[in-house]
Amino acid sequence: MHPFDVETLPAGRWRNGGGATREIASRPVGAEEFGWRASVADIHRDGPFSAFPGVDRTLTLLTGDGVRLTCPGEFDRLLARAGEPFAFSGDLALDAELPGGPCRVLNLMVRRGRWTATVDRVAGPVAPRAGHAGVLYVLRGRWQVGHHGLTSGQGVWWDDADDEASAGAVVPLSADAAALWADVVPTG
Image 1 (cartoon, rainbow, N blue to C red):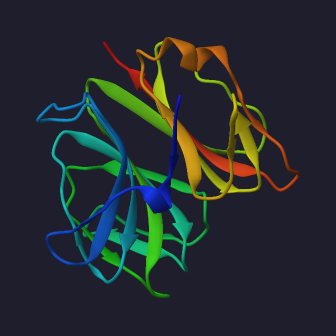
Image 2: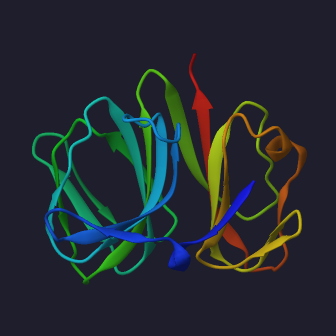
């Protein structure tokens, strides 16, 4: 497993100036077109979200007072509770509104037909399954994976080829522990 701390990941500014993205992982490495990608985005102002044709997305509020995602004729959804995932098609052109100011979200994207993904809020031990990829992002409390202690804003990611990932569990160490568990499964 590969540990990360969001605050030490490089931030890339959006072309439209509305936010910044910190990439956790993108697979396969060096490929022009990702199979799956996990990142944390800081959304600074209202504006459009980029469309990603052929991609399924799951967005989860991490911090802030929420983000309203709208797509005329499709949905109008306010993500107001931290840790509540929302899945949608990346084919859609969305607008984001920040009713309470800037926020931070976890953005998981998978190439449709090659990968599927689910994101769940967890409070107990979890372990990657053999052949799956994914991310664990700590929302609060203390967690342990191998020799790595994790706290809020930290986590681990693994690839489907990481043999040692399925050998160990990620375990909560405090009563207030909560994390996001993203399970990314190859379809072929």
